[in-house]
Length: 106
Image (cartoon, rainbow, N blue to C red; front, side, top):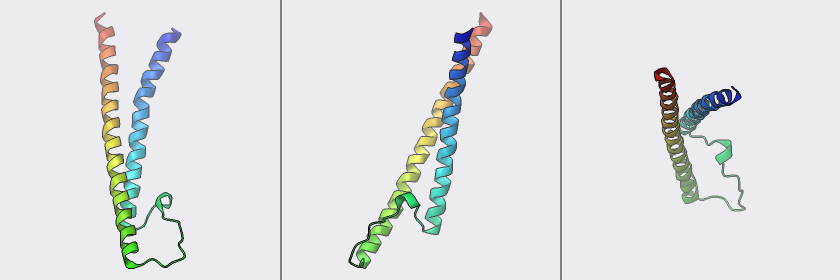
């Protein structure tokens, strides 16, 4: 009886973990898009080094392009993560439904 209960709990956990990751990634995408629209940079990604020289136009332009590239790549990463976790969730649900179907036939 305990083995069956542990199996059920692990099956539920398999489904809930991808759902949680999908929600986290979707929140991250929304935040990154908001930062991109406002032209701000998330605190984690800020360039905090201070030089003793004043930045010239080329440095400022390069820094801005780099920020845009980071936003683009992070958004792409989170979109791929959502797709991957949706696939995992779909597989876990189909495995769960198959296992239910097997017990019905027996």
